[in-house]
Picture 1 (tube, rainbow, N blue to C red):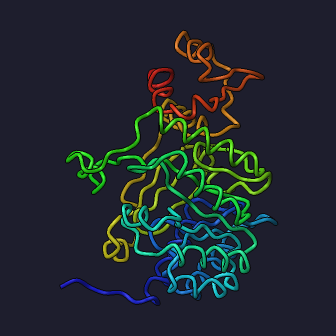
Picture 2 (cartoon, rainbow, N blue to C red; picture 1 turned 180 degrees about the horizontal axis):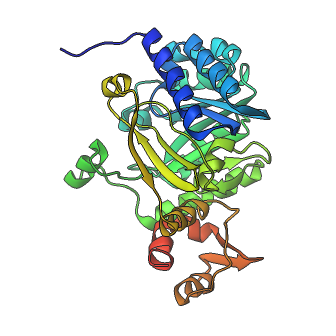
Picture 3 (cartoon, one colour; picture 1 turned 30 degrees about the vertical axis):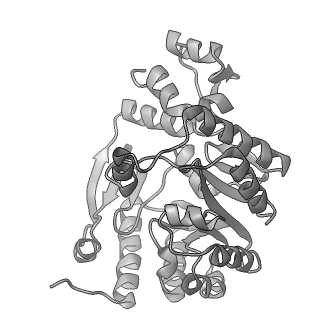
Length: 343
């Protein structure tokens, strides 16, 4: 028989885990808090507030502390927006995914377009910063259809959008459908055209691409995600959460138990805590940093492979920095495999 746990048990466990991590890593400056990975907006606002309060007691906080919560655009979650803002959340990220009913159906989403629009408007009147996401290059998607949808999205006037091309991940329903031939994605050239269209339309509205799939007005970039891409330190708390943190001169990769019941039962909730070698850290730094328009510091020799990527306009090298061009970001996996996997 499966055990069930209430909100009180979750709140106590999450706050206790924060206390354990504080004892382990010591004093730090807290710059962002991110409630993500699933459906955090189903959490009661009082639990969100308790976690924020506990984190702010345990660590020093930056004056512009960014507190983001991911939410789905259904009425049950939207009704909590005001309480979540009062609890301390100052940035909301809404999983809209599409503004077309047929695309929502294809993606297996349960909310309607009307609910998505209501969620965006409610968020804009409630939170200081609002973002939402859309997925494009889905089966049957054309550039004209995507332009109409993206222009509608831009008309809401949010300062941040996350715009992802649909990818086939292993062991998912999308992979099975793709293997059966019932899920056919746009060919590479068409997907590339849609990516270029995305960059152009967003730039015209003042939203610059600062990462492969993220667009923002200056100053509205997601600070939490930038921590990942700049290869900064972060702790992961809760089932399945990952972290990267330096402790006692070691740079560690942590992963907490994925199963909620097991996570609640364990006193030490890290399933893995592995020291990363210098080479592993460098690989991760490259993989994450080349996703951004900032690029990465590069004071090492330029290999023949990297020079080829520069010559073919996939990378630029200036002022001791390597940066992927728009063309390079579009083909980033191939760029990484060719130029860096053995570096």
